[in-house]
Image: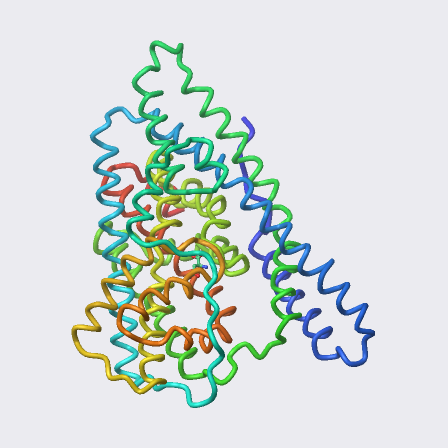
Length: 418
Ligand code: ASP
């Protein structure tokens, strides 16, 4: 039987793509004055920007059908519906827990390292789209138009519709002559599309990374070295320490095996800066390499990409401290508590697309009475930080998938340990 294998040497080729993207784009960027400006702009626009955007579109275009068919076929094969409730409760509980830990760690390390503010001028902040408050987020789960939810890429709504459809399909399988089998077949077709798209990943990543470097060169840290360093430290700490701990404590799983298998997912998240665009790769890795059964993976991964953003919560915690210190405000203990709760809630409402976390940061700043203008400062270094925190976000989704699967007896441990 033919299997659905990932393209050969994917990690190596993606790394080569990334490295050469940085190299070639840097040459263009730093030798700009010696290159005719028309030529520079054509390369920037038609090679790097266009190539990167096409690759990202290809990933995004498959997300909605992939989530729909994998969730429907996962749920329609469940033998009892109580299980679905139990999977959902554990998933949401673990997501809230890890996000709470993430933002608490951010505030703790911000305090330990005595994070100080910025002394130069601050650009004005122009809010863009990408956030929703709790009221809107809940309403998005229950859309009033099935097709509207699909067209708008409303992931929470799509998850809800898929669950409803999957349950109905499950309960009527005898009456429909085993219709659920056809959804499983279609799911395989969409998985194949993911693999076909992934074979272009090295080129796609080359263009994406190149487009960032062409715009700003390699000076991604600007003047905010302390903020950047503390943030990267906490992101790496949460990634390696917290996830290893919960994998070990809640599921007795070997974290090294986990991280080894997550390389590709992290690289995709890093280059696309979008948890949503990474869903196809996360789903594939979680079920085919980490051994999480389809009914768990197809629910936990897309829901996680939408509501679980530990890396984003870490950024928001530290950015709030940093901005408070910049404008000379001493945060009280109550305000720290408020930041933790708000970061947990806003990470649910943050869209899984590039820079969305800086938009919901405005909600937190507003709630603790800090000026929104100061976000302009953070934006200067946000490109690279967004790439790193998105990798943390998706690793959190995958870790929780393994834990939920293990507790439901839905983890193939031989596959996990292979
Ligand atoms: N880019 C992040 C993600 O997609 C969200 C953010 O923090 O801006 O997970």
